[in-house]
Amino acid sequence: MAAGNGGVLDGVRVLDFGRYIAGPYCAAVLGDLGAEVIRFDKREGSEDRFVQPVAPSGDGALFLQMNRNKRSITLDPMKPEGRAVVERLVRSADVVVANLPPPTLKRMGLDYATLKALKPDIILTRVSAFGDGGPMSDRVGFDGVASAMSGAQWYSGTPGEPTRLQAPYVDITTAISCAMGTLAALMHRQKTGEGQEVEGALLISALNCFAPVLVEQAALGIDRQPTGTRGQTAAPADIVATKDGWIMTQGIGPAQFRRWAQLMGEEDKWCSDPRFKDDLARGDNGAAISARTAEWAAQYTTEEALQILSDAKLPGGPVFTPRQAVEDPHVAAMGYFHTVPFDGMADGVSVIEMPVRLSGSPGTIRKGPPALGADTDAVLAELGMDRAEIDGLRERGIL
Image 1 (cartoon, helix red, strand yellow):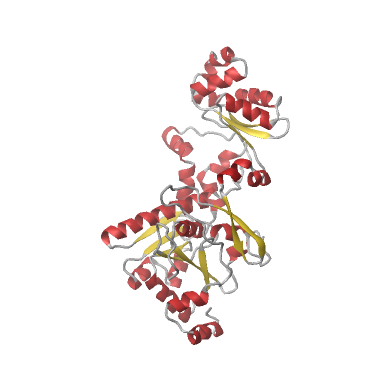
Image 2 (tube, helix red, strand yellow):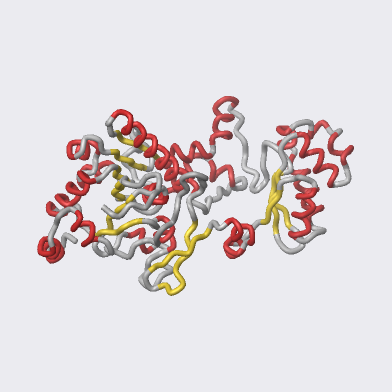
């Protein structure tokens, strides 16, 4: 096993069979917290390694962000000799992470029953698209499919034109939820000696992200219609143009609405109108509030408008391009980006830290993502394999 790193999960070994985001990012968070994470790659490199390529090797932005703090081994687990290696690694591990369809897991020997027979206290953290037990359970799916099924894409568009949400919130939410479940399973094992299966699903994450609208729908059958960027349950809540860009404004509750009306110089007009008596009424009649906010914002630059909103204690923020988000002074001051070494990139690569900070046992990005198969020989040597055995596996196309 790799040398200890002092993290809260130091001594925990995670085998990462994840692909793309939900599985790999769950394992990355565990790695940030100190676990040793071994990523399994196809011999030629798994598909998710090459999405949005940024490195000379073809390794992509998705892979670089989701796979820091990991070791990489190349292995074909579908061949008997490869599966034997997986079994030996499972016996050395604490957690297996996989986001593969259940039939594939079974064929690879990564279903919970098989893993438990190898190591009774193993924890299997498994992600599927739709969860177990329903008519879609065996189907494959991605973030966008689950988001669409939650109602969020229909609701976020305009009438007759749903809008795809470009950021993979569902994948990231699933990954973080699975990391939380894995931590709970490790605590349970510490108390009882028992392993267990932790199951996450993209669809339940998507439903949770969109829960307020769905809970309201289930309770009242209200059938809200999409309104683009304008919010529906309070106002002001919209994106409006300034002289040189765009800003997002939001206000919730009577105190913020009164301050908004004062900022418009029209407190009596807005606060005495029954159409705006409470948050729900303001949401129902938000088009008028958005129009007035847009008229106000058009007088100012983005910087000026945001300063005025801040002085009035009203929430607001700039609508950034990706370049502006990367270069934002506040993001830089907070130190959210970490530059780590990566093969072929002289200046390294910047990745973003996990989305929670702990004062006593913080997560750390100790090393960059691994080159393809960089740790294969070392990991297998730790299992007791000698040079000849490792070379033989490589010659036979297992590694």
